[in-house]
Image (cartoon, rainbow, N blue to C red; front, side):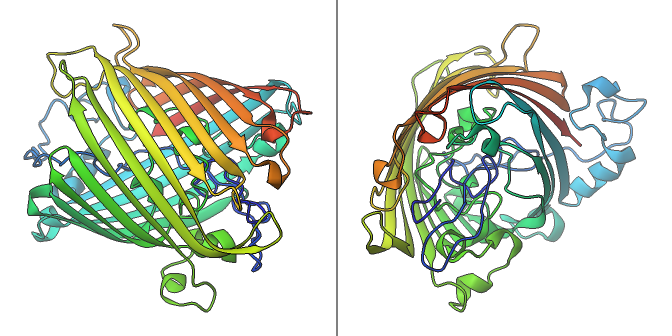
Length: 455
């Protein structure tokens, strides 16, 4: 978001591209860029897009279990968490309803050619979260409490490439240490109704693409036209409700604190004060999404979602006037093309295709239109069941009234290799045509490698 032009480098307030900067009371977004947190972080879950099945009873901890992730049991290189079950302490906590998750991401990148600068850059994200199952801990059926803390650090990034969309979705504009989420969730009516209140990462509820989880470019997380979405690194206080009229149809609605976009209040470091008080801001972000899922046979599932959003702030329009509120729409389609392990009902291995569409108000939005599409696969070879790979294309029509003279187009390819179940390496290559919508900047070829460790 920029001068009300909302500099959306993929909506979410900063993780992938660079993030929130100061925003003036006049509605001009100065140096603010958006992004979204990687969707596959340990302990983080997307909202369901089909009515959840009842939870299966979970086996309680047994110190004699040969499958325990601990020394003398399962071999270290087969542990799904680098620190195992803490000698049984972690498993006992989970029996009591408390799950502890953490992960570390490191991105190292370099522009092989083009862009603004060819220097190597790096960024890190450490995430720690707690999930309290109130049913197991207190007998409160369907209740959950979630807390998430993260710490980020950066050295260069999109400023060195000059791209608009954000080639790394863990980049922030400055180093951060904050409690990012703290919410309560209640599921009722056998999973047909879900309600959440608190400080929420909105991209975990709206506009996400399941099969794009391992791409690094920010636009794969959600369309950059949704520049007002309260997302990483600035989640915000809000209320979300979701209902399933049938097993395969969902309707979701959310109202969030909109203080960050126009009023310059960094909601990532705040509680609900600006949601309930207009001393600093009286702006809100409202979003609704509905969708339907299907299965074509052979476990080839698919889904389509359509969403609309509105931010109520006062914006400076590109024509010199002002505008109260901005609106946008988006759509997502995903389809599993091939299932590798047809006999295994719970297997996710196969090939997936997805598409994205986003539209923004050209009077105030820098990104008028977004089209994205990609292919991804889980289980690349018979001997590499948990590796994944993909190719992604993203085109953003940038607003000429905002000073852009061209559109930005990105091609991304990646291969995520699981070194162990707890450690992965992801080589990634992106070709960025007209970085930042500037036809005078040479096409950038950016190579990155991501290290992820799940603790």
